[in-house]
Length: 493
Image (cartoon, rainbow, N blue to C red; front, side):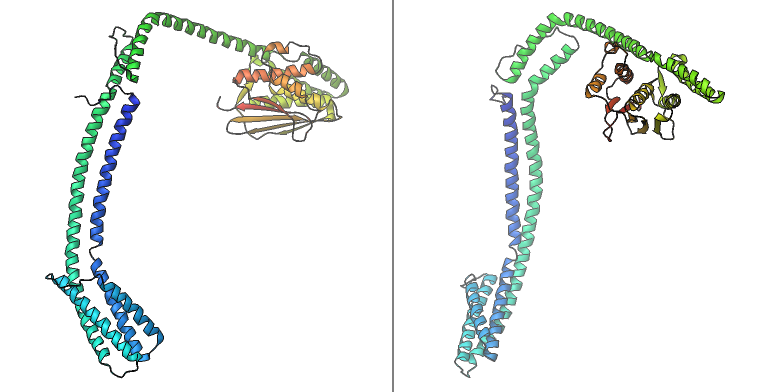
């Protein structure tokens, strides 16, 4: 049986047809269920309407009788106005009541109440007319009262009869709603099962070709190419996919050997490139590490000789020890990395040597937390920065100030070094931060170029060691003068 007479249609049309058809049937069934429930609920809601209407009539008759008595007693304008307004309401209400005799006890009782209401309205109107004419005859008033008492008795009986009938009707309506609900549950269970079967058959018919394509694709993925072609006709999307899949199978048989050979060749080349890059980075890191300013040794020894001549042996000994510690840190076992705490200790040795050299001209301020920083960085990273700050801090002023701050956040240990010099030119800053290879350091070491090379050395070693570019930065301090260097040591490396 062909469930899809529109088999020549597109896949989108088939899916939309199934979804729209099932959705429409569900909506129609829901509307039918809501309509049936509304009818039953309205019937239950109207069960006691007749009792409510009868109570309304009783209240109107009570108001009419009260207005008549008040007018008869006090002869006020308000009472006569209320009497006529209520009498009009009573007459309007009577128009909807039984107006002819009936064999039905309830309708017959309603007919009696209607007539009594008419009589009461008539006699009460005569009583009011006699009072307005100042007649002493109270016969109409007495008849109206007797009629009212009889009417109340009849209304009470009618109310009881209606209550009994309405209770029976309410129970019948409730039972009817329960039966409808039970039948609706059974109906909807069967209805949705039929819909699911219909939808399953429709979807199966649509996706069956896709299952065939999936099976063939799994065989191709397992390198099984001896499979029959689809040779599927038609103009829908699935037929086009089948024809394209046939062409792909034919093509892949021709190119599979070439593809695998190319992949093996590229893998070998990529592995060799990774090994060469690792060797190059290691060699470059060692080359950067070995670049220590040779002039510093000469200046240090010269200062030590001068100090030996001018001062006693204790201070000279202390100076030589600090100098020895500094070179020992730099040259020990040819290490390439050190902890942040070790680097900060080396900086203190270096600053001591520089204070001996420059005396009161050099002021050094440090703010370091009382803790051990175990994070590692390339050895001799901070000394070239301190050297640069001392040089530029004393260049244009009689007294140079260098500030060292150490802090941390969840991601980095932050080391900031600030001087009070004239600052760094934007061109020089960009040259340092944009240095990417060692050939940019092959310039003369005179003057500022030597400083630039030292900072390029620092940045390049940091970048090579941590394999990221955000580990070093040069900024202008908040004071607007001098230079601020920021070294970010990543945690958890």
